[in-house]
Length: 98
Image (cartoon, rainbow, N blue to C red; front, side, top):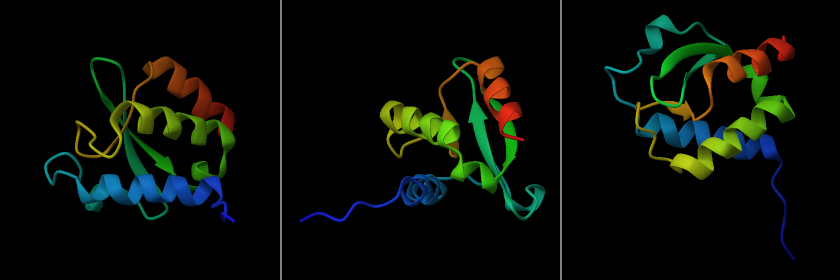
């Protein structure tokens, strides 16, 4: 008998693992306010976004995290969490979450 872990725990695990591989040059915690985290978005050119942690509860954002996991696993090229989608798509998704 298996115990299912909620999707939010999976999202937190992804973030925790990506932080372990974080590069100090890529992101410093001093420029990210409490209650927010950094993601890198883009297909070729990566742009840094600082977004609220509350997004982790949103099914739409969890889908983006699943895509990132399929693409990169826990080895993100920017040193932080990287979401492989177009910047305009990410902005549309996150603006609907506010």
